[in-house]
Length: 330
Image 1 (cartoon, helix red, strand yellow):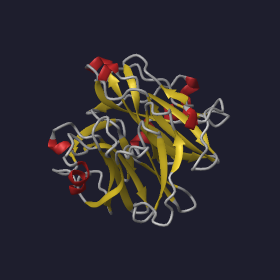
Image 2 (cartoon, rainbow, N blue to C red):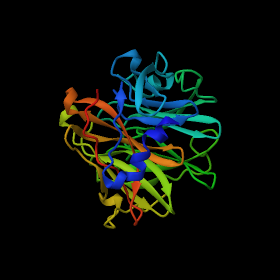
Image 3 (tube, rainbow, N blue to C red):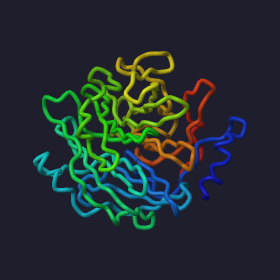
């Protein structure tokens, strides 16, 4: 596809001088998830507050570089949201797309700021069409909920399917950090016979969220966001990573510090007009893992913008991103 050609210099590093790609078009997306399909790319993100019912936003691209707005997913929030929260919140949050077999699974969250009365929902699509990404979805209801008294917050879902045929759901924000539950890989719901909740990362009640998992060369890598989100140019979000030999942990950073004790190795921090990068998720561009994330653009008054980048790996197996592009969006 065109993206593979367009990013060939990035993947080759061009002697170490290549940058992350310059994306164009409609990039107004928060907490992005990206899926490459035959015929194009689909991106989803957090809904716009009190617009179109706050349902999840859609963007599409033929080449992964030039993006077009594709509207929103549905006209109303699923019924379970009001049942759980007692209201429909201004928007739905942090979707996560993954394909397993021919089925596309979409996880997303419903909550309100500062509260852990929250839920993670699921939709499935048997034949997701990148030309019409709002069509074909079936509501599968609530997957996981949290409430007052729970030591976790059921938001920011991310699924990982492992080569042994198992599936896992990472989630969490603030409270006691990032958790993991096993899924039934077919239904996408929590595995009924494996109820253990695993603790992956924590900052003792501090700001950590947006978990994403990827496996490479015998390790499972956990990407998270630290610090303040959702404050435009005042955001201090930054992308961090740790890794483990087992998907259930323990996760350590490059210096050997446990992520359960606040450890984490920086991947992307504020630089120039790219303020508060975070809300990240790994996606596969062919066989290559890429990272999708948002930042707040200092040249556009702090508007959230989509960015994607190949993941680079050093000799010790630690990931990084190429330098940020200097060109402003047209």
